[in-house]
Length: 296
Image 1 (cartoon, rainbow, N blue to C red):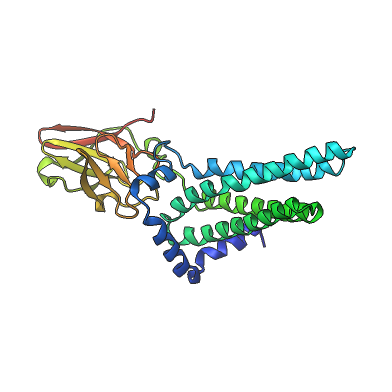
Image 2 (cartoon, rainbow, N blue to C red; image 1 turned 60 degrees about the vertical axis):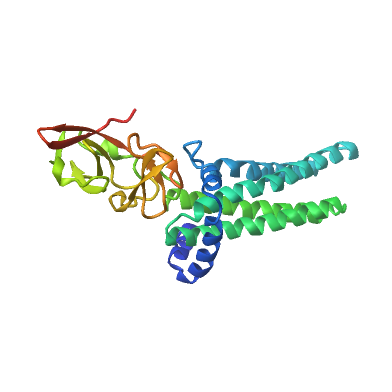
């Protein structure tokens, strides 16, 4: 059986849910602004995969130097390689908390099956950090052989954890933009959505443009139309709420609270990091029409 199939089995392990719910609840207590930073709203891209490169890269380099140290002639040169390996190991451990915090923020806003797989990813990383911390302790005590062995085991487990994280992103679509295809799969012709009077003031309504679900919001005589499936995890935006955020009208997804600026589709608050596709709108003879806006 493929390793990925074994990992996928955890997606149906409901016994993990109580643990996941408790941990996710703790993360959600963080202020919205802090969570937005950890999600990567400011960047327009999840920051966890980027932050994770530093510890994994540092630890992998440590393993390479550990092997190299065994082949370098001369006590002084070998000691120099050992010092470099120890420094990289320490750098990786020091950078791991930031990567873990960003990952936890993203994980806390996933669907239950994704969270179960995410727990396996986090567990592997926790074991790896424990092994690598023990490796650093042994090295500083002068026990290089056991330190190198623990380091190799830690890097192996960390690599497996990174692989599971990639599987979570690609197989289970965690962190992906779920609205990216809208401009490419929706016919660009104008589509009639209904008469203006059919839309209540500031009340999101669901319609369809060439088979693509959209959410329609009327504000006075102005009508805004966004793709109906949230870019975070395809939540139904027509079931969301229109809120005033510091004078800016935003549509909030009912699933995980992502807030999008109504006029532009820009992300106001996470966990979404990708903007919501916006549709061009015209109101003529009291009839509302919309067409998909081509991607830039």
